[in-house]
Length: 196
Image 1 (spheres, rainbow, N blue to C red):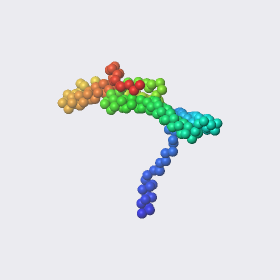
Image 2 (tube, helix red, strand yellow; image 1 turned 90 degrees about the horizontal axis):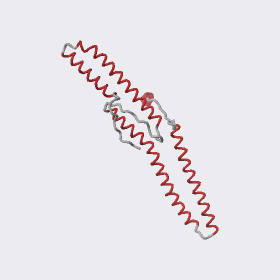
Image 3 (tube, rainbow, N blue to C red; image 1 turned 60 degrees about the vertical axis):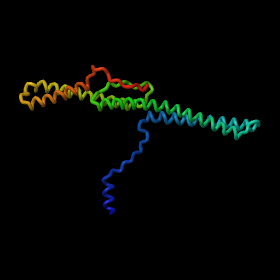
């Protein structure tokens, strides 16, 4: 029994994924920003709490009650600040993802869309750059294949004497036309809903 278990474990590679910083610039930027926001808010809370305690020691204010109010206001304020930050951050990430999903849908439909640049403050620029490069390479390969089909068809069109040969040539012609239409850059660009 132990031998069978050892052979099953030997067939599965032991993969450990311990790389936490996959996009170093992007991740460090937001780690430092969130750390700064948290540390700054705690520092502000500490300064205000110190003031409340000092004022209650001098008399006039109930320190415990004021500290609870301060905690409540700080919690609500931090919640609002983090919510607004989250909205801004997710918009900068979700916008490029949304646009790329529209491009992927166009690619799945057999069209090669003209890619617009990202907005100035959008994130995922490296990923979008690789995506754009891949689309351009696929578009170029399709154009090369359409040209090769066109050249082959011009040589073979006079040889199509039999019905089977004419049918094969018609199939090749429709394939060439579909490839040419997919990479045609003179057509008006596909309209994509803006996410700005």
